[in-house]
Length: 373
Image (cartoon, rainbow, N blue to C red; front, side):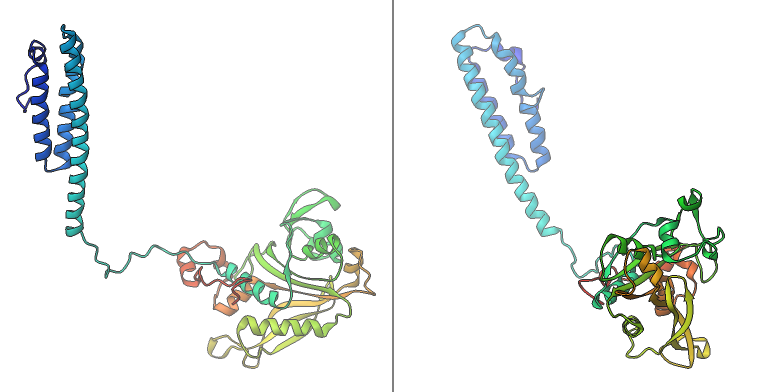
C-alpha cells in the first residue's frame, strides 16, 4: 500500500500489534489532514474502511491472535481507531465541501440582466373566449347557465318544441340520427333548445337562464360546419312581453361589440317554438370591402328570437295564461367572426396552431363571471 503498511500475516506475527495500529492510524490521519479534494478523501476512505480496506481486512484476522489479553487489547484498539478514522473523514469532508462551495460562489455567476427564456404560451380558442364573454355579459343581466346532453331524443329535440314531424329539420339530410325508430330515435342535438324543455320540466317558473353548448347539423361550407356552438337565452315570468326581449338583446349587443349604440332591426320570421318570431339585424357598413359594426346603411343578421310559443309551455306543464316568456339564440362562431375579423368559419376547427396563435387570446386575460370583461 501507498502508506507502507505491512502485510496482514506479518502483523499477526507481531506481539506488539497495538503499536502497529497506532502507527497506521497516525499515517491515515496525516493523509486525511493533507487531502485537498473530496475525490482524494473518498479514495482514502476506501483504502482505510472500504470492503478491501486496511481496517476491514484486519478485522478478519483479529480472531487468530493466540494470546487472549493481546487479542482483547488489539480488538479494543482496532475499534477505537476505526471509529476515529471515520470521524476524521467526516470532519474533513465537511471542511472540503465548504471550501469547494466558497470557490463556486466566487467563480460561478449568473447574469441576471439576460432576458429569460420564454416558454411557449398556449392561447385560448376564440370559441371559448366568446362563450366566456357572452356568459359574463348575460350574467350581469341576471341569467344563469343551464346545460343538457349532446345526445338527445326526438321528444326533447323536436316534439316538445312544437316542431312537427313534417318539418325539414327532422329529415336525415339535416340531422345526425344515431339509432332507433320512430319516437325512440336518438340524435345529436340540432340546437341547444332542448335545454329549455329539460329545465322547465325539472323545475317551476320563473326561469332565467342561458344554454351554451355544441350543436350538430349536416352542413359544411364557408359559413356552416357539421359541429358548431350556440348560446340560447330563455326567460319565463309573469307579464313578460316583446319589449323585455328587445331591451335585453339591445343591451347585450352594445356590451358585446363594445359600442355606445348598435342599431338593431327586428324582422318578422318563423320558428316553431316562438310566436311571434323575429330575426335580429344590426346596422353595419361594408364600404371599401371592410365590415364595420354600428355604422352605415347596411344590415347584418346576428340571431333569432321570439316569444315562447304557448304549445311549448303547455308541453312542459306550464300555464301560458299565467306565464309568458321569450327566447333568443345565437351562433358563437358567427359572433366571433364579426367581432374579431375571422373570415372563414371552417378554420375554427382546422386545429392549426398558427391560426390559434394569431386569433387566440391570452389565457391570463380571459373574462369570467368573477373578473368580468
